[in-house]
Image (cartoon, rainbow, N blue to C red; front, side):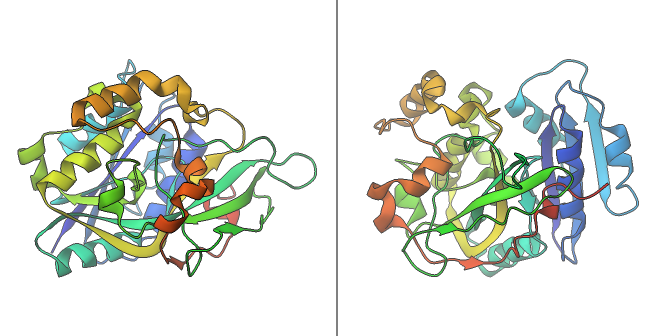
Length: 309
């Protein structure tokens, strides 16, 4: 029986963290699942994490000084006891079958080192007074995963749900999946970090997360995983990736991340195809032939992003 370690790095987002933990607690998985939260020097997370102690196996650490998001994840991984590990950003959400689907995929393919699900990018933000998500769409993570048609390679845009929950609404939804993610990996990152699960034994081969890669840690890790073995795509949108409309995310302006991008491309000998991010890739006409079919799972209820208190 597998043991899965869920790794969360967080800082000063207690409400988002509570929503993330609530979604993890709702997983339909019969195996062992431990959650490790590392607070990167922000407001203490004791109260939030303790509230879930009777619903899951959870450990948390409050760092006195921030060490950065990548180092915080490495700290969490150093405490992980699972043979499988999975990342979840505090503002992203796993749908209930997420963990079980990834474990099943890896069980069916013992040669694989990792698996990842398709995802939906979802605008999430405060109401603007008209019952809509206010502001311009922003996204965390640069040059990330793509989109697909809901059941084909056509447009991947869904109407806004505009349903308020504790001051939050969800807006546009973009489903994404790629026909050949591994071939795309040398040009763009088709793997949302919160969608990934991998065998922890691979750290003995490729090492931990490269803290020098900064905001491109996830793309770098995916490239190294691909060199270590097979990566499996699960063609179901079991990961929800929050795209913030408030404008607080660095990668809304990928040009600001140019130095980190150049470092990544130099490390792996890749040709820089220019700045982008997950959200922008969804609308890039050059990538339309790359889009794949995917099963859409989420019912559109925005409560998953900010459960009522």
